[in-house]
Each structure stands twice: as C-alpha cells, then as structure tokens.
Length: 153
Image 1 (spheres, rainbow, N blue to C red):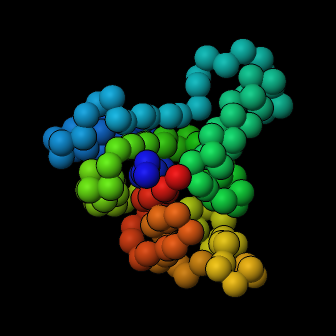
Image 2 (tube, one colour):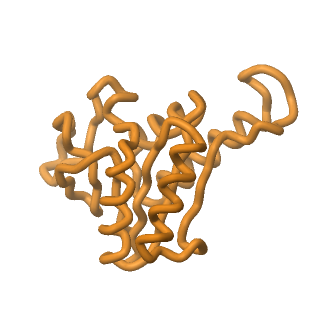
C-alpha cells in the first residue's frame, strides 16, 4: 500500500528546511515534492484561468490521495495564501519518519484553516467534527499528531 505525508508550511524557506531534514533522514529527493502557487501564471487577478486551473488540479490531486473535500479545500486555501505544500511518498516506515520530521517544523494545521470545523468520514456513516489535535490521517482512521497528515491509498 502506498503512503504519503503532506505538510503545509508558511513559506518556501520553511519548506526548504523541511526538505533538507527529510533528505538527511533518509528520504530520497525523488520521493519528495514541493508545491507552491506558481508566480508566473498568465492572466491578472484572482479569477484568471491559469490560477483556477492550478487550484482545481491541486484539489483533485489531494482528493486522489485520500484527502476529504474539506481537507483538500483547506490545503488549496493555504497555498492560495502563500503557503507551501511538502509531499513525501514511500513505504510506511519512511513516511512515519517523514511525518515526524515535518511536525518538528510546525506545519500549519488544516483545522486552523477551516476554523476547527473539519467534517471527517466516520465508520458509522455520519460526519463528526475533528478534535483540535487530530491531524494525521491513515486511510480512514485518525491519530493525534502535529500538522502533517498521512494518507494511504
């Protein structure tokens, strides 16, 4: 089963520090991805087509790896506000380490972007609000942690 850790960081400098530490922790550069809103998008204003395409594609890609609609939208909002996403993929033990490393760098918690009203899937078929410190996702279960999330698909 593939696994990925995702962290949203306040700026490119912080994301670069995270990538450096992830590489020092044994994650190959090929398994890491850094994503921020492109500065060279053609068009002007918030409603430009390239900007919308980027945001729609990011939302779709996040949903594809297991993020809920609310989580994906929160990440898109974070990037829209100047944040930078760091993705690390690989085997379970490497991604557990990646999430720990990301959390040492104080990633932005998705709950902060949604006002703590993050609706999560439940095994009983009804939605529940996430506890403030619930921020690591593994498949459909959540574990307490920092701002980095793990997705399995």
